[in-house]
Image (cartoon, rainbow, N blue to C red; front, top):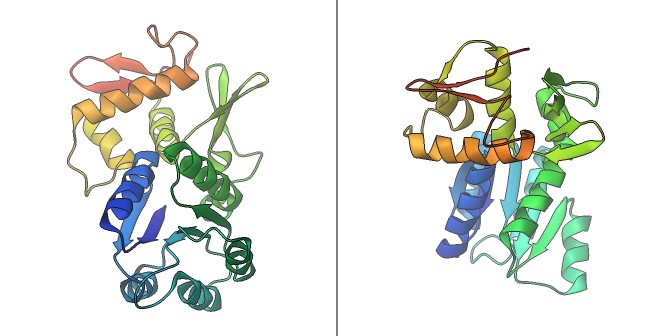
Length: 229
C-alpha cells in the first residue's frame, strides 16, 4: 500500500515515515499542504496521513479536496490540536481517525492497522473467507491476522508479504533477494541483517518454538523456505 504523509515538522515526518515503512507501507512524503495535494493527485495513494496546521493549505482543506476526488480513500489526521471540536470537524470532513500529538509508536501502529483492516479487503479483493494455511496456522491477508486454533495473531503488511511469497513457493528455498523485492520493494537496497531481524520477529509471532522454527526454515547461504508437511 502507498501512503501519503503530509507534515511540516521534519522530525515528526521522518518518525512517521519510519513507523509506516517498518509496517510495510510504501511512503510518499510531503512537507506542506500544497505539495501534499500535488502528490495526492499524481500518485493517488491508498492511504493519506495529514497534519492539520500547515502554513499554506490546512489538512482540513486537503481532506475536503481528497473527499471530492475519492470518498473511500482512508484519511487520518495527526495534529497537536486536541480540542473536541477539532476532532469532530475532522471526522465530519470524512477522516477515518484522529491522532493527537505527542503520540506513541504503538498507538499509531494500532490505529493504522485498524484502518487498513477495514479497507484492505477492497484493495486486495480479500474477504473473511480468504486465507491460506501454513501447517497449523491460517493466514488471513485481508485481516492482517493469522489464527492458530482460537488464538489470533496480529500481523503487519510486511509479515503478510513474506508469508505469501513463502507459501506461493512452498518446498523450495526463496532467496533473500526475492523476499526483499516482495516485502520491501525494488527501491530498497537488500540488507541481510534487516531481513533476518524481521524474520526473527515474525517467528516469535507464528512459531510454537521460535528457536526451532517449523514454518519458516532457514536455508543456509540462500534464504528461507516453507516446507508443506
